[in-house]
Amino acid sequence: MKYGNFVLGMNIDFLEDQDEFDFWYKQMPEYRKAKIDRLGPLKSKMQSLGAGILLLKGLEKLGMTDAVIVEGEDKKPYIQGATDVEFNLSHSGDLVVCAFSDACVGIDVQKTKSFNRKLVNFVYKDEEIKYIKYRSETQFDMDLLCTKMWTMKESVMKYYGKGLSMDPRIIFLDQEHDNRVYHNGELLENIHFTGYEQEGYYITVCSEYENFSDEIIFVMGE
Image (tube, helix red, strand yellow):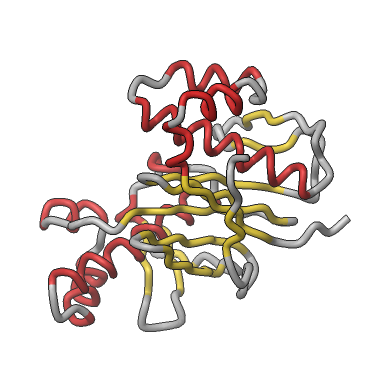
């Protein structure tokens, strides 16, 4: 069965209310509760719980309320026994997002932040830095473009189930030629980016689809 592609998003502010937090925590599977319990800061707990809520909502939308989530050897979670639906989660600040697809998918969200020289040199290759500087008139422009390109890189890492274990500087984003992506100098075939902007955040989906989804579907906790 082809389920199609969609992205769910949620602002987790409402989870600051203890009653709301407790209500949704009780509905989480044991593995998600364990993840939440291991986290220290309240914001981190809220992000993890928010991710669990979005996954729950997405599975309901797909009619898969009895789905069991497991982790592969690469630690990327997937639905046990399902070969025609995949998902990927990401969070930053107060925003949590989850992409669902009938094929491999990676998603990343980042709140726009200032990129100092050390961070820029850690994330980007010399050719990418030249492109960023050429395309930026102000520091704000540079921060926006750096954030956007960072989400692109991390969505690739998550698409391949590597996360930050994959050196971001090994990935080269050829912005001058239709967002071609190279890993260690080798062109990565048949992957595309779909980008979204949301009130100070940038979100990128990496998938085999040229146009993944027109918009993010925002849901509330209640």
